[in-house]
Each structure stands twice: as C-alpha cells, then as structure tokens.
Image 1 (tube, rainbow, N blue to C red):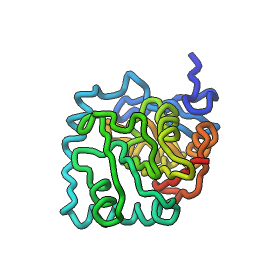
Image 2: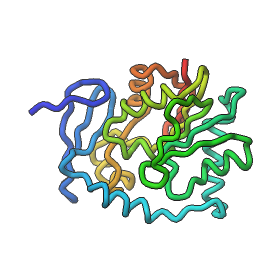
Image 3: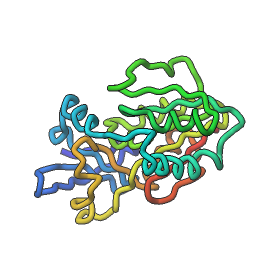
Length: 216
C-alpha cells in the first residue's frame, strides 16, 4: 500500500530500523519522516518520558541554552509588541519565565500534560515559541496552521527541533530518533514546505535546530 506524505502529499518510501523493529515513512520531496503508528508509544508512556525531564530556571546551563535560542530566533526579528505564547511549555516553563523575567514579555503557556487549558483561544500574539515540541506531533500541518492563526501581523514563530541527517544509516543511529516519544522529523526543506503551505515566511534557520518563521 502506497503511503502519502502528511506535509506535501507525495508518495513516501519505507525505512525499517531492524535494531529496534521500528518503521518510518520518508518523503523524498519535502524530506519529512513520520514514525509508523504501530511503532509509537502510548500517551501514558509519553507522559512517563516527559516526567524524566528535570530542567529548571535555576540550572545555569539550561538557561544559557535558552538564551542562545532567544538571541538567535527572537530578539533579531521581534516586532514592537511583547505578548507571547509558549506552546508545549513542559513540566517547568523555563523559556516562558526567562522571557518574562529578563526580556519583558507577557507570556501565556500551554502544554497538553502540564498546562492543558487552551488559554490561547480567541487571542493573538506577537510571539509564539515551541521548543522540542514539533517532533512529538502526529499532524504537523494542523499545528503550524494553529500557530499561524495565533500570530498578529508580523508576529514571529520560534521553533526548536533537530533536523534529521537525510541518510538512512545515520538516521538509524541518530540519538534524536531513539527518543521513543519522537514521531516526526524535519529538515530545512520540510520547514520551507510547511511555511509555504501555511502562509508563513522563513526568516531564519541555522540548519541544525533553530527556526524563525514570520506571519505575512
């Protein structure tokens, strides 16, 4: 049975990782990789994995990690407004707290496990951040369309997700793939496709993990 890419609709090919019996679909056009449904962990198992994260705003290394992200993807492109949403804030909303404390943002947070109230409904933002989130999404276009709808004119969407290596053998050994909760993998080409489909402009990508998109 031929599978179609969830991003661009092109036919995909199968990748099977024999070491852990995991299957994926790879799109040769937009380079999106999706983990097969039968190989995914349950939502409860996903929650257990998330609960292993122990990052906090008291962790100077973790804060420095986010400062680099803020400098690269946000400060250079921000509009005058400072109303933001951190989508997928995690058990400790470090990025949101940092943006409020040190950069003067007024932040809302959403996380399906830790802050499940959809506080963003009916609102628009100058900034939407989503770090280490889109690799967990089954239908990325649905969420990127949501992000686009939440942005004010010239608002920015700052994303962090590691780009896959575009090589089957390297992908098999890639640490990011081995996180069982990760089901969607991207390259800069995938992001360009998503931006074109959802009406966003790509203003920055570092070809590793950091992305800035802007509403038109």
